Amino acid sequence: MKWIRTGSLTIGLLLTAGCSTLQPVKKEVISTYALQAQFQNVPAAAVGAPVLLVTRPRAHPGFETSRMAYVRKAHELEYFSLNQWVDTPEKMLAPLLVQAFEASGAFSAVSQATGAVTAQLRLDSEIVRLQQEFTAAPSRIHFTMRAQLIDVAGRRIIATREFDVTENANSDDPYGGVVAASHAVHRTLSEVAAFFAAQARGFKP
Image (cartoon, rainbow, N blue to C red; front, side):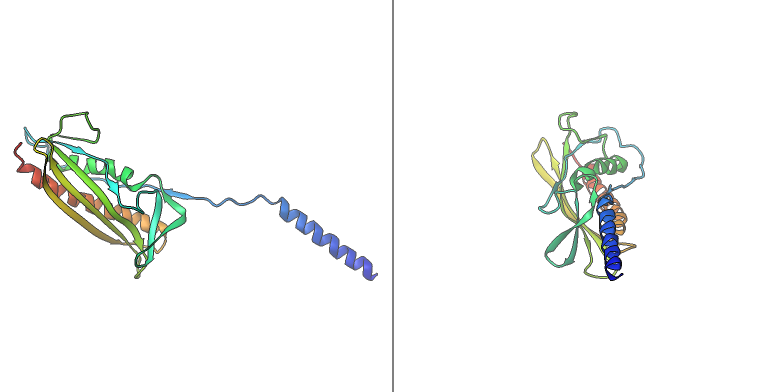
């Protein structure tokens, strides 16, 4: 009888192994997120207000990708494997910058397309960092943007400034970082638009 029991055990193991190989392989699902911000409009610009061209922001190395960056220790940039942006940060920020400046009420028109209108002023910007930092609790988003306003005809820089914002995350995970990032972007772009709108109001072509 001993051989019967052993044989039954062997068959059972083979059947189990066979069933496991027939199971569908679970694919890892990648979650994709977008940066979002809404800006409240102010009264329309005065007659004769300048036209602003907003160029697409550039991004420092490490942030010119749709991969979501995070930091656990200084100087070491890592990326979430199953969470990413819907596009690169500079592409997501470009239309938000336009909306922020349109809402400022300091410009007769704001354009993102080169050659679409004749602009008196141009805003160039770059993303210095956009990362979730786990170096303290709670984790936080650290967003830094540098921008400058240029007199197109005069070929001179009117003003340059770096904007640095941190926003605590409600949860220490990628989604908490996404929500914090949208808040940080809204705060930053509001500051950017307010600062350069003040510079534009005193502009004399």
